[in-house]
Length: 114
Length: 278
Image (cartoon, rainbow over all chains, first blue to last red; front, side):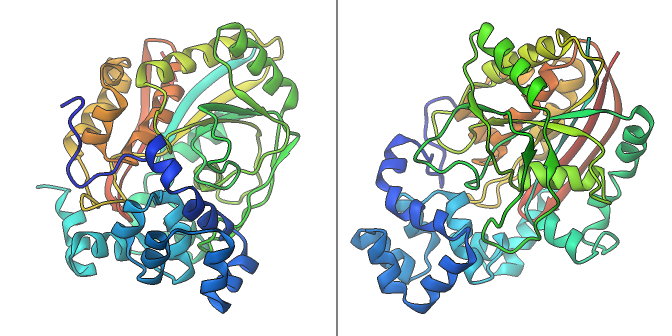
């Protein structure tokens, strides 16, 4: 159990933190309403200001959470990005697992067991 | 000397803030969660703490990844909440206790824990929502000392080290010459994973075993590496490290005053536990 990677899981470690720094820094800026508005006004310019690489820019464009994680995004910072579009954690969970939102919520409920 | 009255450990999911703002406490989805809190509020009203030491992890409000401390202690006269990006309402500011904070810092460094010290600090939902659940009128009756643990960016402090940090905080509070009555709050968890194809992972068996361990065998979880805790509790379930810090502040023998466990709140198995020194 110890050193084996956990399936479907990317540990946010130093390697990911280095890779995702620009992306996470942009997402951190979304703490401020003015910055969220600026992103929505001109997404290209906003991403350019933070120096996103091509993979990060593409993942932002596609609002694709798995690609954002692969590009170094951290879940807590990506949540600030998702918040711009009013997406909640069940929307994000559904997208990542290929389920509908209702199916994803049913999976959570099933964890109650009997 | 100051006295630790008890430790309360609790989940801190952001959507709780939305539910409070919209008054959904009796909504069928939320009721099993909110119904867990009246016994804790009654206990707080009875024991009347002066100070809350709040152990939590920041999610990118006060700390960004440019400077990421493993442990940090607030030493400010006041702590403010702020916009975290997803629109939950900002709560009123919290009074600090800089003298006690500095005593804690001095005591911890003396014991070879080396926290970052923060004379200015914002506090995020992991700090504010438990406070709002315990004191719903948000007229905070306590001064506060924030203790931040990195559960965000690996390498994380080990479970064993977090437990020992709690023990050191317990000794620091016991050696404070004031007569403060202190409650220790640990927030986060229990099992959940927000990211990856494994999103939605919840492990009820592990959570219940962990809760039970805090009562009867508090060092139980310290046998696991943080990688193992990710496997058992999910990438964000490792926030249970904050529970271990809080538990560590209490003596070996404790009394369980209250427990509540509910699946799910958002994507999270929520837990609430109130322990008193026996």
